[in-house]
Image (cartoon, rainbow, N blue to C red; front, side):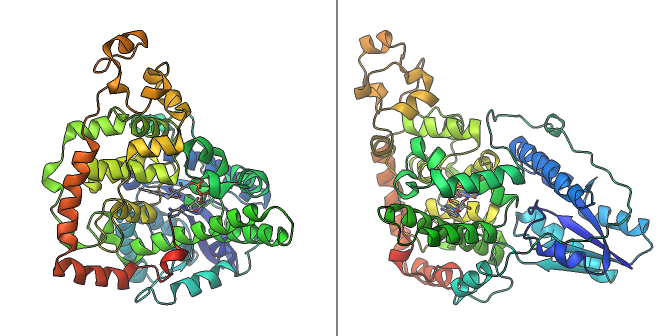
Length: 496
Ligand SMILES: Cc1cc2nc3c(=O)[nH]c(=O)nc-3n(C[C@H](O)[C@H](O)[C@H](O)COP(=O)(O)OP(=O)(O)OC[C@H]3O[C@@H](n4cnc5c(N)ncnc54)[C@H](O)[C@@H]3O)c2cc1C
């Protein structure tokens, strides 16, 4: 009998897990997770991710034990671990896993591992996940294939699995042993149970007004699904989320007075498609982690990096209350909603003119749901370097007026501003000296004056970007980017 090494990566579940089903056919299964030093030490890995992974691994171990199995955890480079496991068994080994569309480190690791497998005639059987397709020539027909994969039957947990009687180790690495600074305070808990509860509560209650309430950070915290870290680390498959949401929408069909609820679910389903659409971009061009999709925009920001601006942006001390509140919320909780993420990046890329390659790495550490394919594609899009997306610049004061008009969110996350009158909550630096003293918010002492002038900076940024956009070189590149990455949906089908 052969041994199937079931390699869990960012798919920490056993439900709807094709590699597990296939691995268990006529073979002994060895369920494996590897803590790889290259990944733990990388600049986009944060203790918050580690905590979430540890919790997910504990949950996965319990799931496996329920069916008579175990989870074996190794520390080391993937190649070394597979070499060791191979030497410890007399059986022929095969490796089963999902395809990973990850950062450059995981991409390189997979290339080396594939070479080793080939050289040693070891089968490494990979299965697609997230509806991401490998390989594709261009985006024609992508949505059709995605829909097809989302509607395939859910894969049950295999039964009567025979597990390899391997020495079992379950040594997790403590967060504090990573030697990285812990900045999170209250982050979401990893594991299958939390994912299931969120899905149920979102579809049955929290998500009723999703469309109306997703944009403000005040309401998004509860009205958005909050499933993103669970999807990123695979506590739940995107297919399971998709099919459960679709069933709920069907149940609501014809029920009077709740049309808004059905449209909320439709909008949510659309976002699940975006999830995969963005990951597909990294799958098709792994270098977009640091290379502009449209090369015409190369060298526009690289030499202007202002460390002081970067620091102020990272810690939420820019003098723009909404920017600071959103950043501080993200730093402590690992979450901020989509619109606010876009605003934070817009501020960094246009107002502060910071290179997205550096700001994206910082935010990768702060987003608990860090998913490289979505992350770098969104960063490029919100920084105006894809060539195919319109340049969207967010005005932080307008965003605050629209989404936190009473100053509730700002007062919560920027306590220096807690006492100031509402009329100054958008522009505290305009308070008189007397008011600054009275409300214990002296500008320059307790809270900074705006570090830049938004209108002035945006004017400069637009001048540079539109000048490039109008060149024939940029236009011809935009066409190529569209063929490779562009959504084939009509513009009115892909708003936001
Ligand atoms: C600069 C920037 C970086 C981002 N980086 C990430 C990232 O690293 N990981 C990540 O999961 N999302 C990322 N997003 C997308 C989006 O902000 C989050 O997916 C969403 O806020 C997660 O919250 P939720 O689960 O409550 O989302 P919901 O609104 O409930 O959406 C459900 C799911 O759909 C997907 N989704 C929602 N919005 C988007 C979107 N705009 N693009 C792609 N997929 C989407 C996510 O999987 C999400 O969990 C980024 C957005 C921006 C602007």
